[in-house]
Amino acid sequence: MITILLVDDQKMIREALKTALETEEDFQILGVADNGFTAIEKVKELKPNIVLMNVEMPGINGIDAAKIITGKFPHTKILIFSSYDNEEYITKSLAIGAKGYLLKDTSFQDIAAAIRSVDKGYTQIGSGLLEKLLIQTDSGVILSKLNSRSYLNNVATLSEKKQTSDRATNAILRLQSLTREQAIEQAKLRQRLNELYLNVPKLQTELSSYSRKTWQTWFLLLTSIPIIALVLFGLYLRINNLEKKSIPLERVGLYGKLDLSGLAQRVVRAFEQDLELASISDVYVAQKGSTVILKGTISNLYLLNRMKDIAKNVEGVTSVDTSSVEIRSNLPGEAL
Image 1 (cartoon, one colour):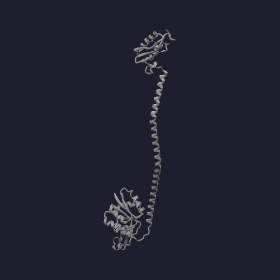
Image 2 (cartoon, rainbow, N blue to C red):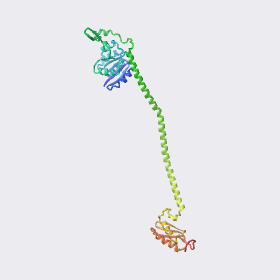
Image 3 (cartoon, helix red, strand yellow):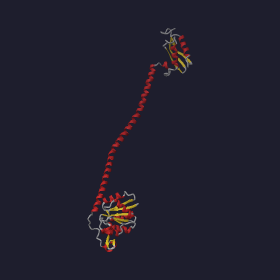
Image 4 (cartoon, rainbow, N blue to C red):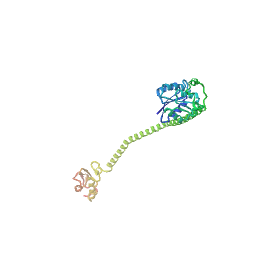
């Protein structure tokens, strides 16, 4: 991983370089600085492999800062990144130990390639700059004034005003274009976030309404269960009372249990099948366990004994109680 410190007094250029170089998998941007003094402190703190350094900055310029860094931190390599192709800048930058010199109109791919080359120990000179360091002689081409001490002593100060070259203008335009594209993307993201924020109250309202309706449903269900139980119990009581009112107790049994297969009912059917007893309507039959109880009035003892004998012959009857039957002679409608 190649660690990098970006130094430029223009925030737009710093941000554009940072955005572009962070896409390289083998690069790590440790930080940025906007002047030479801050760059020296950042190098001391972060110890980057490469410093991509601008030349003209407020306070201390990039070449003087690079000279201090190469002297105090020999493991950190300086790559000058400037808008100017002045041979004075180039020669002095290389003389004080910078490992390369690039112009700001260099493509991001070429900048990345130059950083990797410098990290490996090579010197990297931007396209079209090398000829400014060469002179023609009868024996060929040789390096120009890099080793000339008198030349270095006479180099004009870097604080002189320079006109921005066409290349620097093109570089700034490209960076501005990249910045505008990023601003558009950020605006789209902010718009989407705003839409989400606007939908949050609506979602909260719907959730609250759903929760309220759910609780209301549960409340109605829980309160309706006792009501339904009371209604069913009331119907049961009404049906039971109706049975008691519409069916004589003696026809059913001592405890009001309607059982058509009970002893009392079987005895009644046996009486109805007998010709002598079929017309008797004033004697009622009840039951208590396996005992059949006859109640009411009858005209003579003969008929009572006949009822008793028929009842005893009914399956399940163990005894017949006739103590509640009153004998009254000459009852209308009954045979003697």
